[in-house]
Amino acid sequence: MARIRLVPWWAAPVLLVLLAFATGCTRPERQPEVTDGDPELGKVAIQRYGCGTCHTIPGVPGAEGRSAQLLFGFADRADIARSAPNTYKNLVTWIQNPQKLDPSTRMPSLNVTEKDARDIATYLLTLRSE
Ligand code: HEC
Image (cartoon, rainbow, N blue to C red; front, side, top):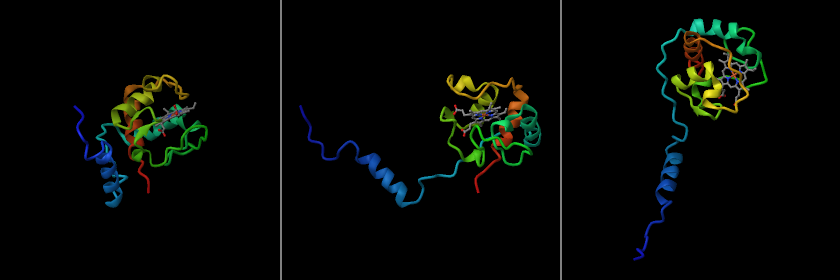
């Protein structure tokens, strides 16, 4: 038996979006990720692995590459290369083996050790946008 729908199915999501706009919370601040590496060692490791040949990374001398994303404000990004949510755990995985999160990515795996990946991820997650 057909029920008469008084409220269309899309009413709730539409109202939520309108409410979000009205209250100015369309871009909620990302909560800081809990990290366990050493950001200073991360900076040094970034130089050692040559991430800066492809990426521009603020705070890392010589990291001025332009063939891949500029990593300004990376901690505020919602995702890693549109492949996975930007969590600490995913970032450590990405740095060690990007193909694990996105088999078709152009970023090469650089044989980064677990320890170095943790330090690098910890550093990248200190980069907030202004
Ligand atoms: C040979 C060039 C190259 C090198 C070296 C390289 N990357 Fe990448 N990186 C890329 C490319 C290309 C992408 C974009 C991947 C995609 O969109 O699938 C990327 C994506 C990323 C992203 C996601 C960016 C975003 O905006 O979501 C991070 C974080 C990252 N790389 C970190 C690193 C780190 C840390 C190193 C060093 C250990 C490194 N990369 C070394 C080419 C490189």
